[in-house]
Amino acid sequence: MKKILFTIILLVLSIQLNAAPVSYSETHESKASDMKEMADGMGLIMNGLLYNYLDNVNMGVKKIQGGVKRIQSHDLKQYLPADTAYAHKFGEKSLRRIMEYSKDVEESMKAKDYEAAFDSSTLLMRQCNSCHSRVRGW
Image 1 (spheres, one colour):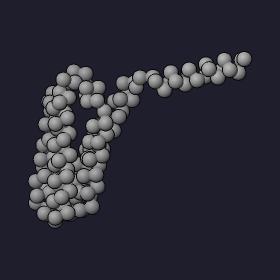
Image 2 (image 1 turned 30 degrees about the horizontal axis):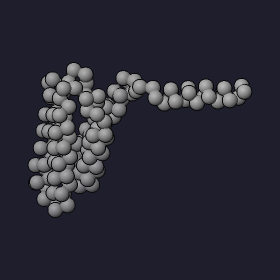
Image 3 (image 1 turned 90 degrees about the vertical axis):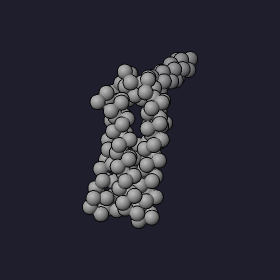
């Protein structure tokens, strides 16, 4: 009887621990990690285009697209800071554009149209800045 009771208590505790809400620090670390990955991707793209490291451009595009996909897997109302959660629709639109511009960079690189890739990377950077300025209140 004690073993059954112990097993039930252990089962209930494990369910409770798995259902525990994510703490602020875990959420903050996740956001910081997503943003850092996208910033690293942008750096790789710019470095690749400026110094003719074409593999860096492709790696940068993959990092940005991966970051966008991770952010899109969250509810943006919960993901954004509380004081700017109202901007979730703007954030969703920004993510779509970032993905679109990163695909444009990728396609331009495949076509060896490096000027178009540079133009698309500029649009990509401007879209990042636009979202950050609205969300951070710059």
